[in-house]
Structure formats: C-alpha cells, structure tokens
Image (cartoon, rainbow, N blue to C red; front, side, top):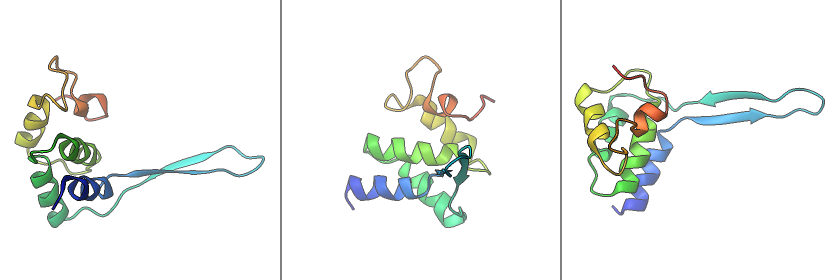
Length: 101
C-alpha cells in the first residue's frame, strides 16, 4: 500500500460536515460520521503508527471524531508526535475538540 491510499483510508473514517442551503432560509449544517466498528478502530490504531506523517495526520483527524475513544496510549502517542503536535501541549487533538484529561 502506498501512503496516499493509507491516508485516503483514514480520511474515509472522518466525519463530514454537510451544509444544506435553501433560497430564503438560513443554512443548516450537520455532521455525517461513518459507522465505526472494531475493524475500523483497529485500522485507525495501525494508521496512527504509520511511518508517513500525512497518514498519521489523517488518522488523528478521524480519531478526534470517535464517540468511543481509543485507549489512552493512542492519545499519548499523538501528543508526542512532532508532526501532529507543536511540542508545547497544543496538540492536534487538543486544538480539534478532544478535551484534555
């Protein structure tokens, strides 16, 4: 598998914002999330450990949206990854909605 394919797989597991625009009415927005089962969770766990930073970034974006979090070790790994974290505690995860524990 090449990194573009792996990053695409991670993107498919992210939520999508859908905006409905109707003339004369205000826009309505909602987020559509794919069904995430055990197989998808295992895939995200593998992708967050990928050697390619773009793949890890896409996996982190998908992990942020999970209703049932992965294990703490995954979030610690993301926080320590210099390609996802700024090294000052403002990690991708914290900037994008997962509260600090």
